[in-house]
Length: 462
Image 1: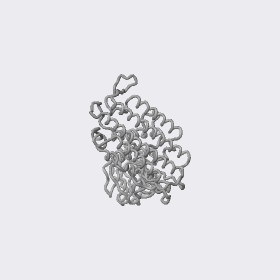
Image 2 (image 1 turned 90 degrees about the vertical axis):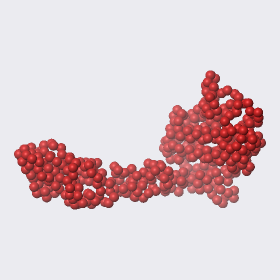
Image 3 (image 1 turned 120 degrees about the horizontal axis):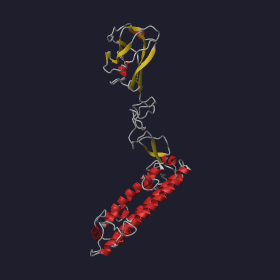
């Protein structure tokens, strides 16, 4: 059979005459591959230049050879071989021939290809056999079929892992920019951070206008919904009947449905439409993608019909938590101290909304100043500059105004509430005045809870 004759294409053939029965295998090995260690084998293609020396020749078996052993997966086509040299391919770039492979398997001298034929009277002639191995190698800067990414290295911490998989969303990374902080991966191989602003890193004008439109729209939506739900809760506590519909035919089932009360819902919807309009006017998807808001697209922030979007859902969820912190289970009007309870409840709500609204507005002001290139400080003597927008609550002017809002909240509640009244409301985040807002105005569940939710609002916007 002379298997060595199949090593080159030179019309000197490895030839056999099966005489009507399947021939012995022509086995070609020792191809001299040097696949790098760690490579992932994707597929193997065998190319065979062959012909029939008259008569009818067909494939009988076409197999891969691993470690010198002929495999079981058969690629025979059973098509008649032509009478002139023709190259046919078996397998493919993603065909592993029913086996698993390592670089060592391919580099082994026993790796190869085997073919046998059958005929009626004549001989089969094989001029040349070649094998092509497709593989991916993490770190070669080429994204292979088995890889999510390939950034030319095998390092973790750059959003493309050491095994060329996307690193999980929120994983720490560095975008190599001195103008961002808190850099994280997005789960699709991209690292980005929050812009720090300040004199060295002012935000480009169009991008800044988009950011400010998102923040202003978000705050107005939140304030409208917050105020509307509080008004509904207050009306219920006063014994008023409120409705789902404008015609006044469907009374509200209870205070937890106040977001569906028609006046409150209508105003909230108008605020959502206004948010969509303002954001669409100042932002494009390209600009939005360069920010760190809760979505990288305009529609993702507020949908075209203003019914969905992360800005709306995040702010609505935060508002719901704020309302839950402020309100008890509701008053019936039959309580012996009903008037005092209602007055206390309204002061708690006013204090909570005032504190949260002030905190959101002041944090936005700080962030916007940084984005405009302003240098801000932790201290009034301006010796310690702010380097991270997430520290805006500690910027001395911002912190002072938030502290005053906390003092005011304490005063409002302490003037109209006693521990007995707070306890009698049932369901507020604490059962005592100090538990709601402590004596210094910087603690208590109303301050801490409203602080957390205002931060959630800011994080969604910026």
